[in-house]
Amino acid sequence: MSDFLRISPQTVVLPVIHGSGDFAVEVRRVMLSHRFDCLAVPLPRSFQTDVERAIQHLPNITLVVQEELPNYRVTDWSPESETRDDDSDQRTYSYVPIDPCQPVIAALRIAQQERMARAFIDLEVDRYEPIGAVLPDAYAVKQIAADRFAAAVLPTIPRLPTEQSQQRVLVMARRIHEL
Image 1 (tube, rainbow, N blue to C red):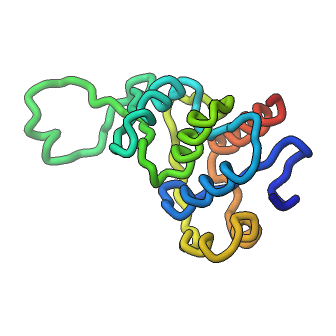
Image 2 (image 1 turned 180 degrees about the horizontal axis):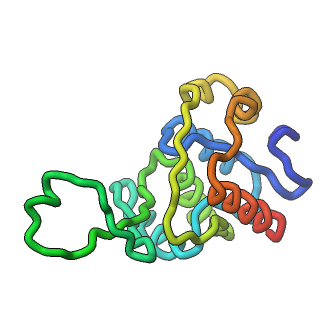
């Protein structure tokens, strides 16, 4: 691993593109070609038990779902809301796709198989605010190492847009430091 991805002598990060099968393959290659004591993933602790249980069902694709709290009402109009007979609240949910093409899931699967310690380090939030990004095609990681891909992409990523995303990064950084 290059020094570019090394935070300290004991800590290495591997930025990935979520949902990328190419990065899932790269994660597998990196994890099996190096020795690691612990894997930290950007998921909240409350997902750990269910996600690790769902990984046992791979290669079948499943979904781990948690209701977000408090129960937010969805106020946007839709034709279905006009015809609904009941006045029940619509609830919102956070989910984690358990798919072998997800790099984080691939890493967790390998860590389980290798009996490696696993830490779910993301901040617990009442309502997750997703952040979208336009990134280069992850296919490039088949031709160049992940550290070079990250070095090329990281300068183009804009500042985190919300307070929640900034807080999440700070919490994850602190937890990585603690590990």
